[in-house]
Image (cartoon, rainbow, N blue to C red; front, side, top):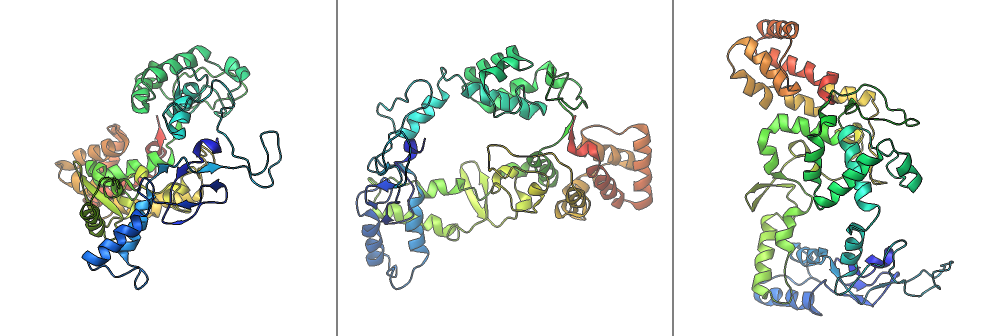
Length: 418
């Protein structure tokens, strides 16, 4: 596997190749030899840039950042380490890429990365579609057909509670060409998923026949996104975080055809991003505007993963990504405290809350109570709940909306998927 990626180059400038590679000096990815030095000398002579040895400024950080592009350099090879012991070769020999099972990955004019990707997702691959289909079923239902999801021996497949369903899901995954959004749309429209959630805890020693989704708490990302949508409405989908997506337009340069003036214009775009330090972007179609934005204004997918320790996402069990998916649903005291007194809760129930301000516009205490319930729980209140909520608003005015929203956010119904 390492050999398939051994000629993948990601450099941040010029330096000798890694000890695990051969090929000598690493040049700028996909650029003519010496391009970076030539461009810097041009900028110094025509644009007044202070030479690197006198002042390492944002311009040189930009030219280094151009090396963040990934390229496939056939001159780079993975070699076996000096202390290698095994039957696959001798220390210092080049490690040739090969597959452990099935047919060989066909390079045939492709890069090695493309070859291994095509091999992994090929229809004849006996496991890939099955594994991802099983994982996505587990994501929807709270229980995969095969548990644990990382054991896919033939015996485990045969022993699964629903082998026919798993085979069908595998075919569907291939049919939609691994489009996960389309695949999940299919699952969410099944009668099984739309059945009442089951409070029965699945017994991993027995077959489980999915009377409905398993009643469970939302994943950390789902809980976070629910709160962000409440706080910002549909505007949340226009906000892009520091995941590098907005660098694409700036760093995507064809060094073989672009003129120095073309590259300089990209540098000016970089300066508009305050040297790449803009925390986030707001999108308007294909255009992005850099803005200063904190984490509580972005979806989980726009934040660094895994989240920082003790953050709300970490507190609610976001995967540390040491393995493919290591999230957990364990309850804890910090979770309770985060919902009771955390910054996000204050944002949703405080004086500047979008939830509260939107509901203040409704007529009458009863409509406001219905609005709180429908906004947070996606249902209207019962008669008893309506009477309690109306009483809170009559006693405390619009502050009662904040109190009611706080109470519902701290209820199991808000955090659990039914």
